[in-house]
Image (cartoon, rainbow over all chains, first blue to last red; front, top):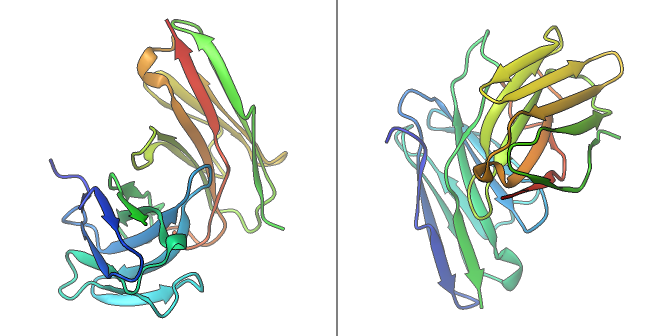
Length: 116
Length: 115
């Protein structure tokens, strides 16, 4: 399967613990995005990378959140000192950048976080 | 204010029937409009993506239309199948092409196809 891969698919943790999610994008895609989605809402943009450079972070991304894409391939999203409000589906998506490209997004299956 | 509104909020149809979902938007500037299908608990899957110059685009049994003058789009599903049961989300890109930071998401239409 050459789609976007995310793991773990589900994570249950206690408040105050740290969690890390991994995303492997489609190999030829140079842009990678993280979104957060809560029930009944559309995905909210968190941050995106072009190759290894993190080009933008949403105000939603508090200091407890950090994302990396060290070699321009896979990315990790870490949440420190989790709070119950962090419970959500964390979606990763990738796209190919280019002048004639519409930037179509390909999403992974998501990592569902439950903070108890 | 940039908004994407979808109707109906939910819809129940019988297997084999056709249906049409609506999307109205007030996003400016406009780059493209996308329809996604999202199964419960899974990531969205792209169905169609249209720029302002495209009026219609098909993907199998899915046909999307776009009227950039009235800022309306529709998604028509032909000969529905049980596997079409999902949320269908209209998304408008409000920035330059290829930039996915400024996506305005609708709340989706929840479609249930019953046997």
